[in-house]
Structures are given as structure tokens and as C-alpha cells.
Image (cartoon, rainbow, N blue to C red; front, side, top):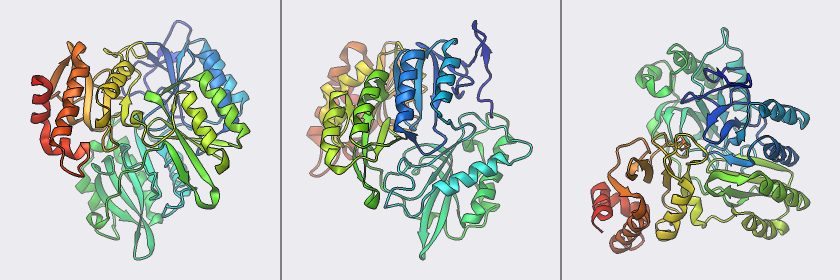
Length: 456
Ligand code: SF4
């Protein structure tokens, strides 16, 4: 197993980490503002429903009862004490829950089931895990290093940042893999279009280059031209069409002969473990069998008949979940915030709700508003159309950037609603026929938006 962070001994003798960029695994939970946090990825493509029920019960007993699904689709249990971490591990072992370790090799939430996929990416992901595990000496890599393997389906991982990206592409009736590094689908540098047998050796070669940089080496530090020169591409990487943005996970997804998957989002990424458990127990009576974690803080429920979909969505709303693609809360990303994270300077959930109340028509599905408790931007590391981040005197507003970028305008704490109303009014006044909020904001540019916020 890869050691994810430089751990420290806490008073109870458990190893935990406060290091930025660390990986808060069960072996090295992370210290946060509300106790220890562990992040879990199932070893299989998802959890059996009863496994997630067991994890919810364990989170109630061992943690502070708050569960999260991250922007990448990992499960987090918050508020653990050092003494309760081994209890959690034991409860997970009793429930037969198998957790992935080592480098994150991620596949889309409906991998292998999505009828729009060019190819099922799960076998290649398994092949990559085996290839990495077989490396001798073992590769020591940055804890947060990640690889995405995307079969080319509609619910893809294009918006998720990754060090190494693989996407199935179809050229002249044959399937190949587009390899890119460092970023999202839109921002990553394309390296080569590879025949499948060459993919694992190519990825291992990139990983060895990263390992040579030490345990903080990330793909953004690699020279793309050198990588390109060392690989045989079967086609021009720039001739591969970009993908359309993925639909929101919340809602119904057609799986052809595999039935339907029903997506539910956690509001601002969190839910009480008790709420999730009672929700899942009813879903089981509706026929649900498995749950997959999805990006955008969502759960994909599998196994339910179409006749129970309406009842399940109504139930989800009663449990405070997002169940429909048009829910404006789908388009806000907020981190744990004050009270849950020691670095947070603002209550992100209160701020996110204020944005929804003040400017609902901005959240038309074309953009994401990101509310971040500090410049780290955990809820959405990539750029957002609008990012509201904590600043010493209130908030910083970043236009078309990430939480770490220099704000284009500052907003006093008590005027956040007014500021967002002004942005909404600006878009309403200046939007052209058929234009989305995102397109309008992009056309207006940061200066105009910042001026509207400052001047009213
Ligand atoms: S972005 Fe949010 S969760 Fe991440 S460190 Fe900052 S305050 Fe904490």
C-alpha cells in the first residue's frame, strides 16, 4: 500500500496527516476543523447497497454523522476521533467492504453500463492497476496523483482534473485511446492516440517520469513535447473531436437493456449519515441493489424498476437530496467550510444558499458557481465561471478562474446577496436572445462583471 502522506502521531497513537496535498486514507486520516476525515474509494466500480448502509451506520457511530461525496466522487466520513478510526476499519471489514488503495485510477460512474460508451473502460483500468502494482521497485508517487479512464460515454469525466487522461476514441471504425496530461478534457495537453496494447506501457512510462521527480511530482511539471516524441501516435491528436459537457448526474440515465440509473446529488456535497441510511433502506424495497459514486457529489442508484422512479425522486427530495437536472443547487459547488474545516474563513453552505436565493436565474445550467472557504478550492479545483472565495474582509469574486486566482473584485460579507443580485441583473439586461448565462458572462468579461459588483 502506498503511504499517502507524512503522518504524525496524535495523542491516541493513531497516524494522521495535516499535510496539504495529502491523501486522507483510513491509514492516514486527515485532521480537519471537525476532527479526523477519511476518504474512501470502493475497490469495485461501486458499493453494494447494503455496504453503503453499513458505512452510513459506521459514520454515525464512529464520526460526527456527516458523510460527503467529493467533486471527484469519493466518499468522505467526517468527525472521527483517533480512537474511532480502528473501530471504523473493523466495521468496514465486518461488512466486507473493499477499499481501493494506491494511485487513483478513476472511471465514469456508469462505466460498463452506459450504452453510449465506445468501449467499457473497466478492463483497461484493471490492466493499468496491475501494471502499476507490478512495477519494481514500487513507484513512489504524489498522493493526489490521478488517472482517468473514460470509455467515451455521455456521463464522462471530462470536467474532472487528472494527471493522466485516457479517453476512448473511434477512428475509421477502430477503437483507440487518446492520452493527455495535466488538466480537464478542455485544458489537458494531448500527447498521443494509442493502440490499446501500448496504453499500459505508455502510462507506466509517464508514471516513472513522475516518480523520478520525487513524491510531489505532478503531470503539470512534465514536458509534453518530450513525452510526445517518445510515443507512436496512430493519428493527429488535434484531429480528435472534443467532447460535449457531461449532463448533470441528478436525474434519470438510460442504460438500455440494463434498465435505468437514477442519480441523486448531495446538497453542497454533504448529507447526515442517518438520512442516507433511511433513504437507502427504502430504495432497497424499491429494488435498488448497487450505488456508484459520481462526480459533482452524486450517487447513482442501480437496479430499480422504472415504476419506482417517481416515488424514489419524491423520497429523495424529502431527504434533502437533489433529484432533478433543473435543480439550481446542481450548479453550486461548495466545500465543507467553517465548522468542518480548520482552513475555512466562511460558512460556505450559508453563502451558497445566499447565492441561490439572490440570483437563481444565473444558475441556468450553463455554469457552476464555486463557493470556497479558502484559496485551496477543494470543491472544484478547476476554473469556474464565478468563484466566490473567502477574503480577509468578506469575499473575493474570481471571474473564469479557480479559488487560487487573484480576485477580480472584493465583496463585503454583508453585501454578498446584493452583489449577486447585481450580477444577475447585469446578465438579464445584457443577455442576447438564446444566450446562456455563461456565454453572456464570458462575452462581458471580468472587468464589466467586477464593475457591476462594485458600483451597482
Ligand atoms: S477549500 Fe474549503 S475544505 Fe478545502 S481547505 Fe479550504 S476551507 Fe477547507
